[in-house]
Length: 547
Image (cartoon, rainbow, N blue to C red; front, side, top):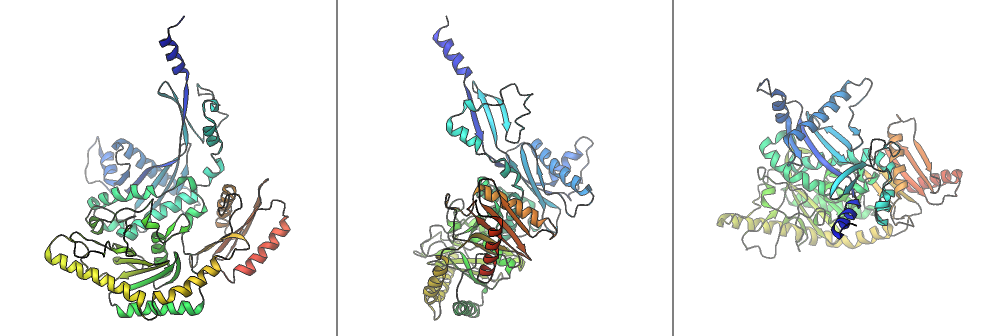
């Protein structure tokens, strides 16, 4: 007979706990492959070179040995891909049992940015110690080297077992394009807010990245990686020609009346009405201001996972902080960028949060950014880079007085744009009625559309009946596969039709720079009917789609 203490210890030791770890961005590596060490040491030459090449590593708490190993791995992958014969471009994606890795060189430089995503895995714990780790990429039929049973689902609760079953192996194969789009967005957004990496001193760059990178990672939802993650363009607002002309006239009057203004963009409910910027610059700014995971929102930067507080140090080139995700989230005056508060202009410590943005149309000097809203309308104004505005109050009497003048300047400009003859307040009703009459009309088809020539995007307002989303996970997987096939077929394939055993149809069709995706829920509809419906869709929608 055993005593109760021994029995309890035996039972406790026999219990097994399974912990499910989700995918995550485990590392971000930025290094300059062109750096050559000027120091020579027969014992540590390679380490010196590696340390000098490395610009930034996330998480910074990792040991220097891990940082060197990871950077060397990426360098090796790049070198290996450059040796492969017959490839038009370097490899930019690698998948292993534990990780998916994407990397890219910044344009016109030898600086490489790499994202490493750790894949989901399960930890088996007995008596408080980890006894087994299994990644979802492991072959379930090849566990001969594991000392524990392959099937440990009996240790899990009902909820956990369902979580295991719901891990989509097919989706893991489709992460390439979404991950590459996240990497592109990382580079694009950093350049927008801070300019070219090569133009920033390394000691200041390190501090900026230490603030920027974790904040950027917080905005990534790895559980919803799909074609929508890769959406990078505009939703255009559907308004009649006369209203469009009135908006253009208003913008021209703003630029004429204010010499300090370089460019103006006007949006309605995060849909583009008009912009004086070129299409590429406008797209980059639009995507930062309102676009997140394929959905456009006026208040994107005011809410989680953005919504960081504005700080004066993030406005300074050598301030050590990034303006990423920061905005006037609690401003009651409609300023997303601009005065943080206009209710008490005379109070000390006020701030005009007007960050600098660097766009392809002016990559060196940049512009000062002002954004305010009036109901659903958003007005985006870029000031001349030569304009010198005191934006922070350092409690000096003269500076405080100058700041108040700038506060008043922004307020007067906003009121003029809203209340002038032909201003926002007059245009609002017509824009609202025309926009809502079209957007509230149920689309005949469930679809989305992308035009790469002018960056136009449109999603139908008809949703999947069961989930109330644009597409199911199976449809999303199919869309990624179809996109890959069509984009890599050298124009030999322009259409892709897919049907699973228990789902409806998915059609992907490409014409020139335009691609549309059409979804049919009815699993019993024949292929001939699907093709007929596609022809009807093209005839009806390509004449009225908002581009």
